[in-house]
Image 1: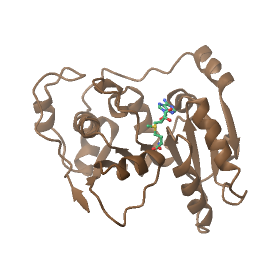
Image 2 (image 1 turned 90 degrees about the vertical axis):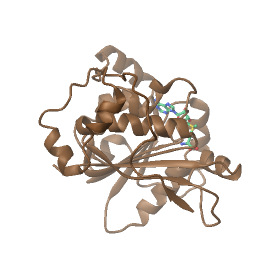
Image 3 (image 1 turned 120 degrees about the horizontal axis):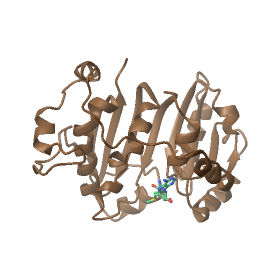
Length: 264
Ligand SMILES: C[S@@+](CC[C@H](N)C(=O)[O-])C[C@H]1O[C@@H](n2cnc3c(N)ncnc32)[C@H](O)[C@@H]1O
């Protein structure tokens, strides 16, 4: 059963957060609607953690180690609609999603699936070979650090959907939360107006940290929360990823945050 947790985080402490703003103050100040968010963007609170583009030599070095299979990115980037999956692991969700995109005849939407580790990327490649060219026609798989790849390749709002499904929670290191990383401000800017970003996790702490970061920065990111929920045991639930299946079979709660970029 889906249980709506609402868009507000749990009661939070008053210690200063990343920009030195007490969290309770940031929350009191939080805009409540997308239109209010758009108005605030005219004078956003300074984001002291601004994402710095890595140096050209760092980007070139990263590029030299990247690998890919499937449709080329140069080709896919011309498509009218694009999705990005960060940390796709062995590609279970990516392949299922690509199949459904290939079946939607009315639109041409591609998926870029990025995984950092060699082992998982190679397992993804093996899984890929069990699919037909038609099933994988909308997919490019890239072995890279998603931060460096995105910083180098995507500079304008071209993404219709971003998936971050079960990132490593890194207990005790809330700054490693994707929503707390400076990179997230770059990521939010490359989502199209009305485009979506889905974050799923089995860690309630990670989920709450992401919600708190959202309250602090959503007026800068121009993102608003559409839905947040906890997935309790449910017979009809069909896991999308390996990790989701594992956690679900253990009977763990699954949390999901869905964000939408405000219309301009
Ligand atoms: C816990 S696994 C989840 C994999 C898959 N999404 C799933 O749900 O089964 C997290 C994955 O994110 C990948 N990852 C972490 N940081 C990354 C980054 N900066 N760029 C690309 N992949 C990353 C890890 O290598 C790992 O495979």
